[in-house]
Length: 219
Image 1 (cartoon, rainbow, N blue to C red):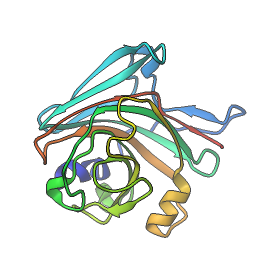
Image 2: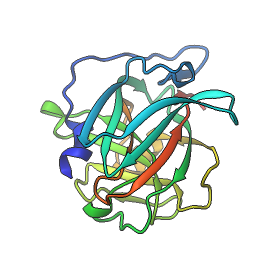
Image 3: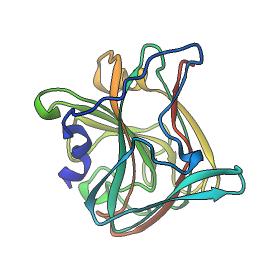
Image 4: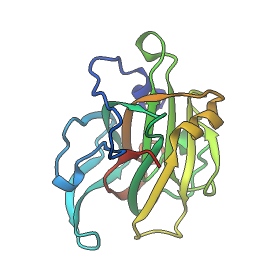
């Protein structure tokens, strides 16, 4: 539904956790390895996706486990990231039960076993905000990008697809500044929100995924 996808765009600017470049050039967004949410907040759209910290023996680290049963709820953090200094979004995830047999170009098929959002807030109450979603797709091949069936202000990009990498940790690095430029035709210099969600409310399916820590880097 529209409210589920667009909520991260419309969330009013109340608090900002600023982030500035340093010699490290690596800026954490999560502390999952500590088993802690930190500044992350919850938002439910339809039902509750179950999120819990768990120890992964393959990584020898604490990670975030997400299980959705015909539900959609997410976690978000308000954090201003300078894309000029640290444009690269880094993350890892593992999907053990994907969404299958859906048309992701339709509202009924807009469900993903794993996705990470970045949001650029704009306009009164964020009404003109933009969002880039990196997803584990069911239908679209890796590298494909398409507009959300709910609003053209949200673009999705498949960083993984189907079942070829199931049950394995996959590491990703995306140049968010370049992705935003390609999708929206603008050179956007900062983002304001990072969010994650495992959702199956439209398809009524079950999905199961794990998320490792998320950070931005200069290269």
